[in-house]
Amino acid sequence: MGTISNALNVISSGLNADQAALDVVSNNVANASNTGYTQQVANWQENSPVYVNGVGYGTGVTMTGGVSQRDRVLNQQLYQQQQASASASAMESALTTLQTNFTVASSSTSTGNIGTDITNFFTSLSQLETSPTSNALRQQVLSSATMLAGDVSGAANSLNAQQSSLDQSITTEVTQVNTLAASLAQVSQQIQSTSPTQDAGALEDQRQNDLSQLSQLIGINLVTTENNGMSVTVAGGQMLATNGQSFQLTTSVIGGVSHIFLNGTDITSALASGGGQIGGQLTVRDHTIPSTLASLDQLAYSISTQVNTVNNAGTDMAGDNGGAGNIFSQPTVVSGSAAAMSVVMTDPNHIAAAGLGNGTGDNSNMVTMANLANQSIVSGYTPSIAYSNLVSTVGNAVSTATTESTALSASVTQLQNQVSALSSVNLDNQASLMQEYERSYQAASQAFTILNTVMASALNIGVETAVA
Image (cartoon, rainbow, N blue to C red; front, side):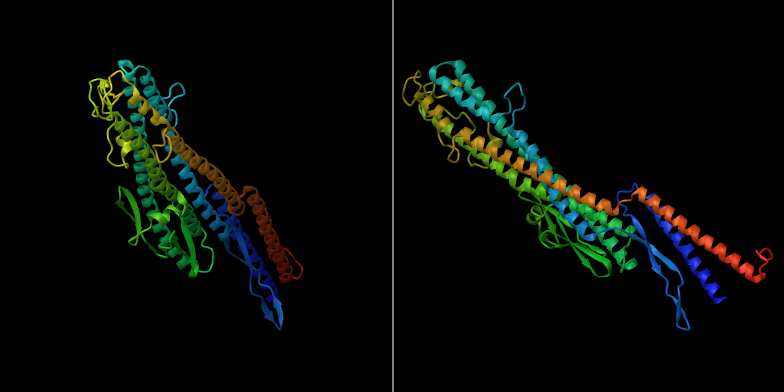
């Protein structure tokens, strides 16, 4: 009877293991559409054999649980690529918006094109040379100057507005980072408590989802700790979250923009180069926009001061010698000159076309003013070339960001496909496994039936119907 009893135990363990395996398949199928779920595979383990008189007898099998199919090294590679991709994508979006300030507003008009405005302004000065007393041409000078100043100040104000908008987005995303960091700390502590030596299943899925979202917001580094725990640091090495404890990012306005702090340390610069959406936005907010504004400020400052200087060195229609007044608002410093650029002259008669002390019909001073178009008055370049350099710099930045974003996005997609091939639920495979486990269950059941028949025959000395 010991051998028969052992056979019954083996069959019973098989039935239980097959049923548990079917439960794993059923759970996989139920979560097939859950993007955060990692498929599980039934894990079988041989029971310890029983030895009688030196002979080992098998005691069946145990299904020890479903093992999630994840590759942590592959997942970490994905997080790193997501950081880089999110940063490049954020930069591409912000730079594309920035570039619109320096493109033609309409296909049917040149309005909004500062380069065209510069050309039109100096062309109007050249035209006034031919007829320095013409009121219509004088009015045209003021009109073209107004268009130039309006578009320059408009572009500067748009850049300042974009910088403010990026700043608001960054502060909002900092709140999201704090929420995810708190969740990560809590989940990691639960994993340590419940699954210190093996995959934590659903809890591991939650931690993986939190890490994926966090890596798209900010540059992070992962450190595996004892008992299946995990610590997360930000670019620069400061601790963001560890088992059961998270450290909140804070913001404070410095120099008109929000700086990000962690444990009292300003990590703004480190985050800008660390990746993630915040990193890309910080780069544009703190580097690209200020650099572009500086170039635009220099352009506005140079044109305004040079034109005003020449105008005040001539004679206007009212006979004022050396004091005709400014055409543009006179900047005192370079910074902010673009946003403040405007035309302050209202009377075209105060345009000093004549040379100092010459009659009002003279045009020598206007020749000098018009020639500014061909002089290197803007950081060693003519106004048109200086503006062209600005536009080229922005265009190159957009092109580089677009190329990088496209390449990194493709890399992320490739890694996601690899992760999906391993971790996502394939319903065809699950259907095959379900049939396999069902057949195995049926086989164990049949073995149990056969063994029961044998036992009945033995008890009834060959009379099978006496005992069922």
